[in-house]
Length: 141
Image 1: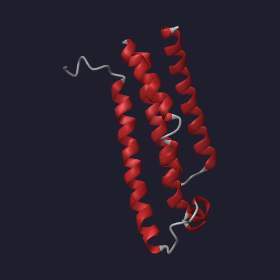
Image 2: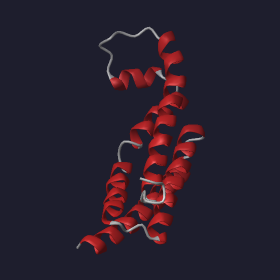
Image 3: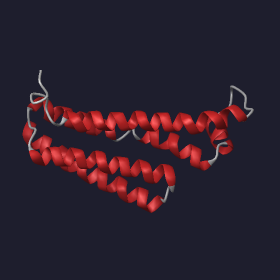
Image 4: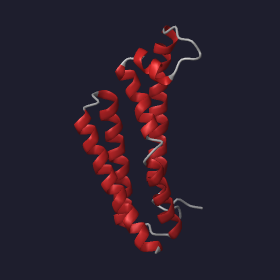
């Protein structure tokens, strides 16, 4: 299959997956040094470990977890549109916009963690995903 036959909607799906792996690597890069210095029992609970971990280190893990939540809806909708063959410019724009806003959300979360900025980017990404979902619903129903 040539790249011209590959649905364009698969590109933002793969891009967000690549970003998720980037975040996983960043998370390990900051967590492993901290965890190797901490002396904690194997029976420690997550809340106990969180109290021992600096906030700026926790943010990377929290964000990685967030990338396992709402983006799963994006993957499903983008793949549904790709399978249905609806690779139109509006859907491509929405999909790439979603990816860009989620990357922005990650960067805010993992650097400054300014809560209102982070919340605003989340709400914006949700709006984009709702629009993409509505377009998919109109197509399949």
